[in-house]
Amino acid sequence: MREADTAFRAVNKARPELAGLLTQTEPSRMTEDAILLNVPVIRQLYHWDCGLACSRMVLKYLHPVSDEEFQRACWELQLTESVWTIDLAYLMSHLEVKHCFCTQTLGVDKGFKNQSFYKKHFDTEEDRVNRLFLKAESKGVVVKKCSVTVQEIQSHLEQGHVAIVLVNAIVLMCESCSSPVKYCCFLPVGQKCFCRKPEYQGHFVVVCGFNRTSGCIFYNNPAYNDTKHIV
Image 1 (cartoon, rainbow, N blue to C red):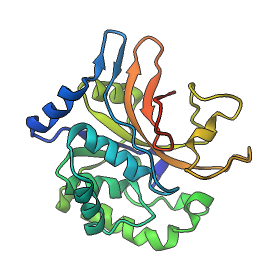
Image 2 (image 1 turned 135 degrees about the horizontal axis):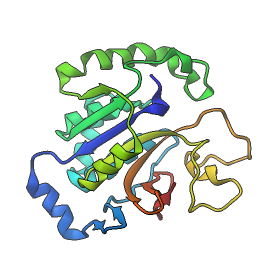
Image 3 (image 1 turned 90 degrees about the vertical axis):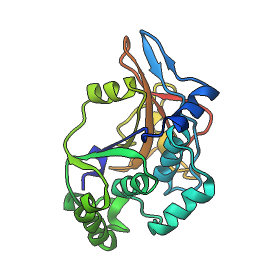
């Protein structure tokens, strides 16, 4: 699976009372020029759980669940330290959140086998991940083979929905970070930067807004808990 080319979109379940609870606390900002949804920033705890942290952000925004319920769902789905985007789709389905997982490849893309980022878990995870794709429809997990444009993501945000996006952190720059090594803000918690870029560094972020005039995208980075990032 080309994990770097995936987008995961989550929208409100048909339970308006839950959505209303969140909008009453601190409404999202929507103006003619910009949209910034009130998605809380939750920091990842380890180097491997950025996807789970992003899932918790989304759930806090549109479908509140307790920490105990979230942990129970992770346990029931047998999530480990190797979390793929398809795992997050199963997690949202398990917690009854309407969602759509968009990917260019249905299953594992063998072209990533030798990438250092995947090498450690690739062989053991390949069968598991492929099985999840095969069973997705029967489990109520929505998966579509397609690319997602920036315009489609903007339209999604305009409806008050958010997106979990897997990026190659090495090529994604953050305009709010200090120079010259801007990509450092995407490194896993506790990992020091030695100014040597690997070829690929997968990292999940939550896209939560954009500026129509500048074209900037606002997102929450689970590696940080004190700022919105801009690209």
